[in-house]
Length: 394
Image 1 (spheres, rainbow, N blue to C red):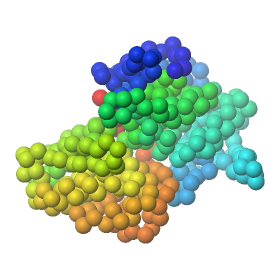
Image 2 (cartoon, one colour; image 1 turned 60 degrees about the vertical axis):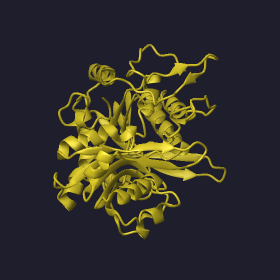
Image 3 (cartoon, rainbow, N blue to C red; image 1 turned 180 degrees about the vertical axis):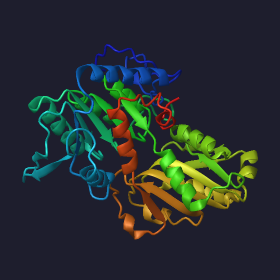
Image 4 (tube, rainbow, N blue to C red; image 1 turned 90 degrees about the vertical axis):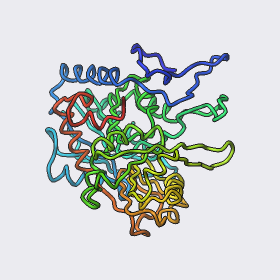
């Protein structure tokens, strides 16, 4: 583990532990305290305020993937820039041997603070970020680089312990990838990270990371389309990772919630979803709502829909932040219980999203603009009245 002068503060039971052989175990996704994260972010805010003028900044949108929000935010910033300089982007040329040449279009030589917007899908995208951040810091002399990720990949392997509690020699990809960024990136803002491991790994390398959830953006859009009646709706808690967002949704809509117990059978990709008898009665003939961070094969959401159908639920509205859509999703998305499915343009889907008519995409562009505007003003997201409800921490 990298040396760090900062003493990290973990929630009870969420600190990595060592076994008898000295191996560091991530039994649960490690999670920092709300207070520590707020103070950590503010310390970097104070450093920025002392060294530069925050409005002396440029936003750089990396060459976007097809159909993701970086296209929309680039068009928005070209029409109405934020900061002192016009928006920049990258022009990329790949050589036959796979080497990548990157040129910066509209670079601001005198910008002291740089915001890089990149939807990171794979290791190649991490490399693109490193090269652009290095250019601004070590060629142009920028003082601070903030990476904003509408989607951050390589985050699923956040534990190295099997369901039986045994050590598993699996690498922690997100830790190594963030470590590779730490030479060039000073802060990170990530939309709906897969788990708290992402923020913890960033902190291990001295990078404060703000985990921002678009739950309110999505729920407001859902409410426009369905007119949620508190008497007839139930919100579901699909797993621990999304419980914080679900609690916010429950309080915001003033509707009750139920929690599924998800059990993965050893050695099989099978999940069982169960509700107590009291909860089963609660959802009977009700419209249900589930919010989840990512849809891959849609196996989890489909299993929930099957269970709800058996319990007599009326319908299921689905909010999915990251639409990954790997093979299998195209059949599962047709479950008869689904009344509406909302996704965002946080990333380029793997599957062809145009083959189905029952999913609607919400753009994260307004949220990204709001985040950048707020940060240029120097707010602390954990203490701001509006943003603190979007922070995925307790």
